[in-house]
Length: 224
Image (cartoon, rainbow, N blue to C red):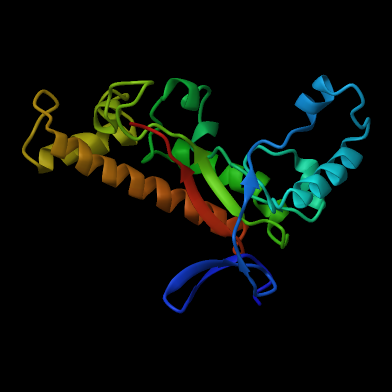
């Protein structure tokens, strides 16, 4: 019993463990939302709080125990486990998810934005035993996908020359004896590792400053 969800290895197998010390298999539903139901149902509850309590009971009756990402905040107080998305990198500018834009993971703007998000979205939940953990972002573009054919290395080389991301990418290439005109897949993959490591470090440290108790579930991934 730690008072919060955590991970624990039991007989060689890793488990999620509840605040009370029981093993836990999270079976959740994404985007449990009041508005779609209110628009489609002829007799929805007029009170979002009453709706949340009724919906939580319904989910439990269907053997679900978790309200997944993007679920209505009113559910947080109903006794169902929840796991929100923080949109940390996505908070830097608009359409990062939609257009697959690359954030300067080495810059001060990213660090400041991430800390603001953690203060606003993590600190209020730091003592809540029903919080499973945080997803830091949703489907950031880490390599070529349906939104862009660029690697993160190419994206950082295209940033302003005064930016931390451009300097980091340029120094990385210089150290490998290469230039932007003859990039290899190995160059792109190695830089991706550096960017992902920096993203993970900055987001995790920000969350821990404002909430030392809950799991960090990482970024929700998508791609080819």
